[in-house]
Length: 341
Image 1 (tube, rainbow, N blue to C red):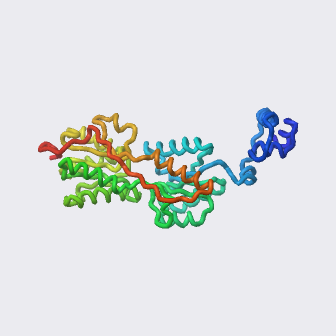
Image 2: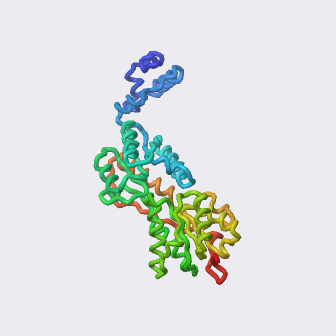
Image 3: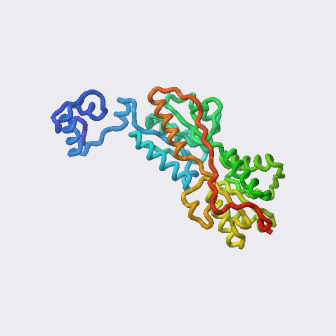
């Protein structure tokens, strides 16, 4: 294995000069710098990154903790893609650590990124509570930002979209169109997002004096199969509904297919709304109405705040983002012909 000293001899400079070139600290002439990089390329030298990090106290990396149960689906693919692109745009590299299946394992993933000396860390927690996240921010010297959770003690360290309000507004739109029998497919109820979206549905009904019927609620787990099964279950039980809201687009697409197979026209008989506005939502038939969440803007704000803290800035107000209902062909006003029978 080639050493830094061998690179220095090949370039005709001192080991200290090679170190200055690699760290970017101190002045080195352009001709000398070019000789060092040529020697590195010719020798195949790979710098000891950990040693460099110890010397410079910077790794030029941002960490992201996220449990592997969230990796699938367009929403999280978009989140990871945006995080990687924006980290690269700031001249850094994104490191992903798997939070696996418990709060303890999310903590282990965080510690792994700290051990790798990430300059700053983003956490998309599935299991850690807001109080635990507040405690982590108190404990760590490196900047930490939390995605998709509201924090009580450190509100400026979180970026979130108001899931409850977004779900409530989507259901209110259906009520304004004359729908009263509105079915709802939940996400996983061990997920804060799943619980908030269900609460938003319930809040919209209460706001308009519509009795909440548990028979119109079916629990799902975010997959198209869950959406299809929810519709099949509602029809099998003889539950009447003129509209259905699914807690994500994957389940909404499954619901659309099941309604089609049952001979129920969308939106003439049943209107359907999903969540997340995934790229395929405009391309299904009929095109799917969906609540769009500003993922790109949320990730950009998260990274901007981390960089701001790395540069010594003090955070101010918390960042809350709103969802927006994108109405497409799958939603129509209720008529005398609307509803399952």
